[in-house]
Length: 194
Ligand code: VGL
Ligand code: ZN
Image 1 (tube, rainbow, N blue to C red):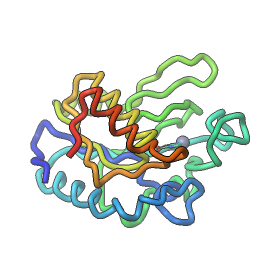
Image 2: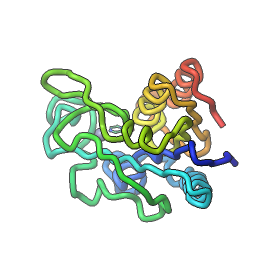
Image 3: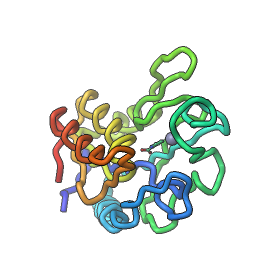
Image 4: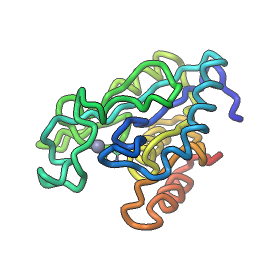
């Protein structure tokens, strides 16, 4: 188990019905399998008094992210829908960072992209970690090859010691091997896999 302390934060990425529930529109088949590990990390972090932040994919009904609007994804995690709610089995509590509330695109918990200008816009996550004096982040959640990958790469770029929990993440795997390749990319960038 990872040792949680005052300067370590757990980031629980997108454990929402559309990804984590079998009835979800973008169900990640490995999600039920990793819930136990996600909850172990959440419980350990909470017991140590560490900051736990939950991210939420939070899309408008139309966004270039969705296949019907020119993107690649089925409609998922629409603001205030059942699919956008956290999965009931996840025990993590703590502040929530929503990505895409104004129609921004992108996968990272730290940054979003304005879909028209392409500008990078920070979410509240970076400021939240700074305010708590965080130097190390532990990342679990969904999905390995999209939001976990992007969040971990941003965390390294922003100077955080970054640990991803191997049995607390699951991949979409649009192409077989995407999850494994994402893990290799994280390792190359300096992420520690536990
Ligand atoms: C995600 C695909 C589309 C994710 C979000 O949370 O990894 N994947 N939107
Ligand atoms: Zn999305």
